[in-house]
Length: 278
Ligand code: C2E
Ligand code: MG
Ligand code: MG
Ligand code: MG
View 1 (cartoon, helix red, strand yellow):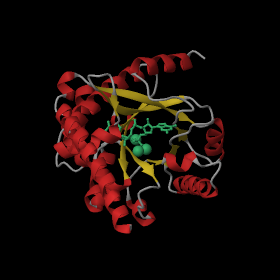
View 2: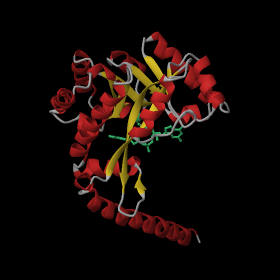
View 3: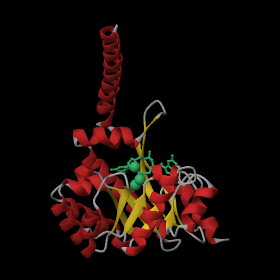
View 4: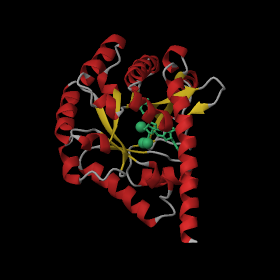
């Protein structure tokens, strides 16, 4: 009986894996042509200042629209693109597009633009040169560009990461740690990193009102950020109650579906213009 169950179990997994394998082979082939086909788009999610709740910036989030009109999540295709090396031209495109769009937003006032960096991109020898090149080309100011990195990327080779972050800081870029709290980075290590912002992972915000632990973790991260003179952003704010919780805890910025979903550039411009006229 046990043996049979074990076997069924195995078959269940094996067919699931083969399905995933096939769909990833298809995606992998399609991925080779996304850039030339213009199938990639950036959507922008507003970042809100706590207190007056004004939009002060946004995060660029990559979207891939397939021929059949379906969307592939970046969580699914970025790992593939990292495997194939396609992430390099894709990341270059993201950076340039985000800087160009960021300049349009800056015509309406001071505005920050956050972009997510892939480990593969960060680990390339010419990473800073490529970044500086795009900024020079577009004229977007480095201090308004917020580079989002996860703890795991920074921990891979912490010595190198610290050196890189220091030279990014010399060039005035802003650095954020994305999904903070999920990566087990040690506090003594955090102390050594020249960073500007912690983005509290959305899993903590999700249960901030129902889960005692998540409330405690959120408050602790905010308190620690304040002590270290870092700014702190709450990700994944979906309700008014969550927004009020993080504001009362002393958070600086927030982001989430309660305020706005990621949207095309023209919609964000309309939203920012509307806010200006209030
Ligand atoms: P992330 O950087 O942590 O981005 C936040 C994700 O949470 C986004 O998912 C966003 O749409 C979603 N989100 C925002 N507010 C809420 C909310 O209130 N509730 C919920 N449930 N979700 C919310 P998305 O766009 O699917 O992106 C997933 C991840 O893919 C990103 O996580 C980031 O790690 C990666 N990614 C996206 N764009 C890029 C890119 O251009 N380059 C690289 N390397 N990675 C990217
Ligand atoms: Mg991010
Ligand atoms: Mg995040
Ligand atoms: Mg994430």
